[in-house]
Image (cartoon, rainbow, N blue to C red; front, side):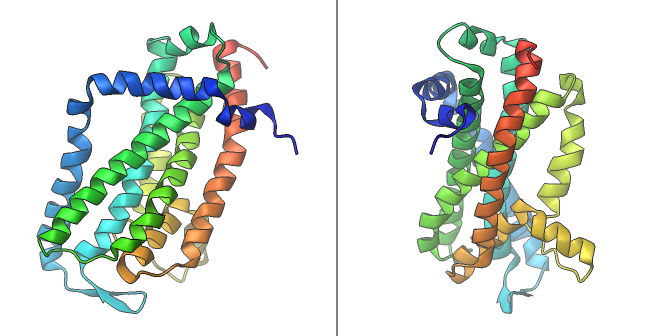
Length: 273
């Protein structure tokens, strides 16, 4: 079976070279770049999980009582992978493409556009997973303090799932990188994608309803399945259908968006098509 070039590029050395370039640049300022993903979960867990959660009694989730802090923790993992990967593939990739002309420099070497795309996707997914791991470390600290009780064995499955999710959301971010006319229009994907996906996804609060529109949204929302799948693993220690739905939707997103991203970016960057 022969895969199309835009899929084969994922395993070629040029894509790894693009990823390595981004890693080299990041390592120069890692000590400052790592502060926001470290401080953000601490602030959010203290403000919402401990502060606001102190006013919220335990509530029923899937037939079992849970504290709001315990409910919030898995949602933050899903949201971190989503937000980091999407923004890296949107803002950072756009700046490298349009302002820094990094893509132009790469394309005069043996690197082709499909390698640039996969390098950007892999880098966004790597950073999203690393930032999610930082959140896991923060959650471990809360557990040691006795504020949080999770099934830590589930983390073994959570980490690769977060990487797959970050890959999928990175391809979505690159789609908007190819479409937005200028950096001033970045607020459009923020309101069209990030806010609906991020907050209507069972990440920070339960989202349930009998309306067919609500049910359809939950079925098609990959971030909802990711948050609920991780929540089942970490709160109940159970494998569940949300994990299968999340994996299926992420693979579908990657399979559909990678060739679409390449086509649109080839038109924008190279003037082809």
